[in-house]
Amino acid sequence: MRLVSFLSLFLTIISCNISNNKIAKDFYVLSDLEGNAFDLDKQKGNVVILNIWATWCKPCIAEFESLEKVKEKFQDRNIKIIAVSNEDLKLINKFLDKRKYNLKFIKLNGDLSYFNAYSLPTTVVFDKSGEEAFRLTGGVDFNTNNFINKIIEIEKL
Image (tube, rainbow, N blue to C red):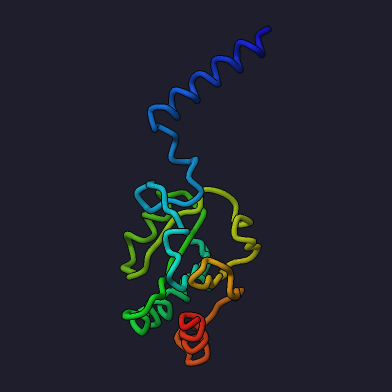
């Protein structure tokens, strides 16, 4: 009987939160650095270079410089670079406050397996329809002709 009462109370609370649009921000799979929902599907129409990183990962941090350089080369194209971490939002913001990167950073509210990522850094490239085109694991210099040309070819499709 206590379980039934507890479940009833729990469902009432949840339904009130949903009906008032006060769902906890943790329910979002992806969020911006202010904690608002971030919908990766809204990036369709662009090639998306999704860089999965962590504040403690030195190869991840080393990639940011080449990501920024390549971002400048893609400036007038339908190519977006997004860096995502599943660490605590306060930790991510504290890390970024000490550095001035010119990249779009978001938070994954869950496990890296959401992107089938099992090592860091991992970069997943999505084509304009939102399908995975390819992925890279380990530290990468993105500012190479090979990488740039591959991304431009995907953009043309």
